[in-house]
Length: 138
Figure 1 (cartoon, rainbow, N blue to C red):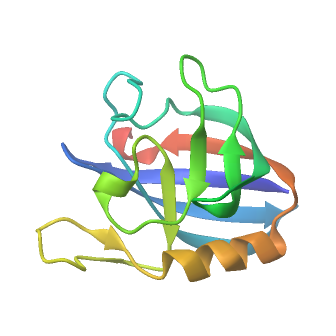
Figure 2 (cartoon, helix red, strand yellow):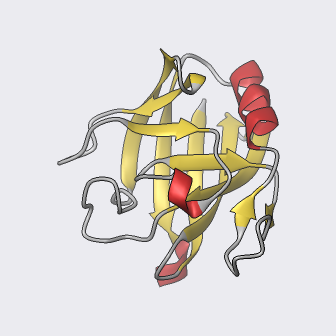
Figure 3 (tube, rainbow, N blue to C red):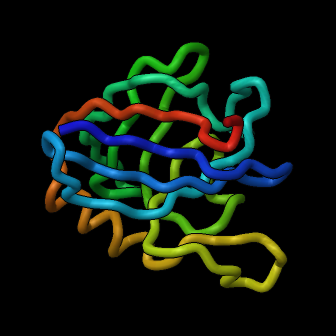
């Protein structure tokens, strides 16, 4: 399987994307993604550079089962995990069902993040390639 993050817009506070998981040519899962904006790949405040990475299943007390994106140059512990708000990202990718402004702060948040992660974990393998591209630059 291969995953694809298609970044659709990036603002000063956040980046909004869509994620697709494919088994060959068949889409088996999709969701929305919230990340920080790109700030020169700086730790805890920037999205990672576009590219192809490996996502591996990982466990932690805080996020339970989630994915760790491997071999990000200059960075470590870039995760795919649950969370709702841009301040929850800290450089990671938050997966959710939809975008909406949950807390009325003027920024889009992701909804149903824990449920979305459970759905991903039910269909995704323990390890898969993930391609991240910046469509908003096109």
